[in-house]
Structure formats: structure tokens, C-alpha cells
Length: 108
Image (cartoon, rainbow, N blue to C red; front, side, top):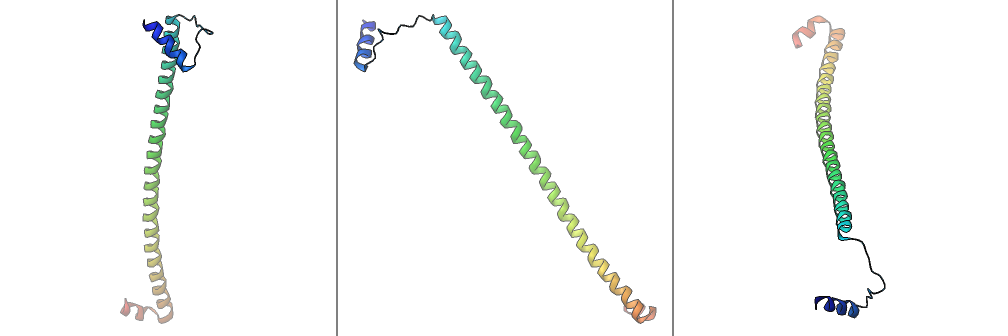
């Protein structure tokens, strides 16, 4: 009775299964589907591992860039301090040359 109901349902849908009958055994279908599933899982796992590797790489590069950025900022600040000291020393040297050592000692 169930087979007849299925035939009627297919007939109502407009599918005519009488023209094509597949003779592939269920064990072969099961093997094929299992292989397909396993290939899909393997592909997904590989993609997931690749995504994780790339995310770790992005995190490493981000940390490295931040470290270099901070180091560059510290060096810029140090350069500014050294330039300020150099300017002060040049002014002091110019004052010594202009006025002599006696005036520079009184002002410094």
C-alpha cells in the first residue's frame, strides 16, 4: 500500500519513474555518500585550520606593528630631546665665543 501511495504521489508531481530505474546497490550508494561526506569534512577541517593559521598570523603581525610603532614613537621623542639639548649647547657655545668665558660662567 505504501509503494502504491508513493507511485501515485510521483505521478501527481509529474515525475515518471518508469523510464529510469537505477540499479545501484544501497551499499554502493552508502559508500559513495560516506566518501563524499568524509571529503567534505576533510576539506572543511583544512579550511578551518588555514583560517586559524591566517588569524594567528594577523595577530602576530598586528602585535609586531604595534611594537615597532611604539618603538618609533619613543625614538622620535628621544630625537626631539636630543635636538633640544643640541640647540641649547649650540647657544651656549655661541655665547662663549661671543662674550668669552667670564660672561658665560655668570649666566650658566
